[in-house]
Image (cartoon, rainbow, N blue to C red; front, side, top):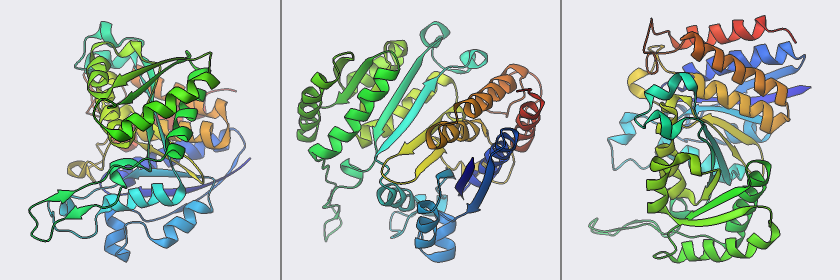
Length: 358
């Protein structure tokens, strides 16, 4: 099979972790007899530095002409510490999502037996937790207009906007994922306060009848935030709007014990994007110490979601599990033995995959 991917390393640790995931992608493609082609593109702060645009037209063309995008991370302290900056790296990510029509971010949250002790939550609460967070990605307060400051700079406004069509397509997707899993869907909103949430709930209740095999519940976001920590195993598929999803999915990362372990897939109208959920971690940039496993697991999602190659994705997961069991990990999740570098972990996983017989 021909696999044509765009590689967008981005900023901070992005180039290191993306290169590691790319090496894993190469060895898996070779092992299964696929023809892999790839091309690099600019996004984020590095794109601003070179073009003035955090998501240049050339990068968008590359993404549109590819079957999938392997993405690293964006962000730079130069912009974080400058509130008056007119152009920011994060605008590149939002532009990519909007222009590619990436309306759904899918984040599987599972636990790893060897990492249970790394979570701040009790092992008995998180052992065997397995949930999927689905976040609406192109609507809500991040994209609503008007947005800005008053003329005197003493007040600001952000607008949260959702259409019925935007809500229906993401909720239908969530129902479909629930049908493939344990047939339970939790719809998170703030319908007791927000008009947009009331539209979410009204639309979702209308869709319920189309999925009678799925048990549906509705939960206010503050309650969901609490129960996600108290009883994470009660959840199967969870769907919510853009800002709530941004917060809840980062909160869910503590279940696994490390942000460096969670992959994601952003899917929608055009080319899908596969990326770790963590940020650019600029303090570690260039030090070869960042955990590449979330990006490697994102490559597994890429094989599965973009190319429907389930066996290839499963082999990557098996290799990641083996590296965890062997304790061949980076310093953020290393408790016994010597922490390994980013590239060392990637090379270990590549060798493991090469050693497996079909």
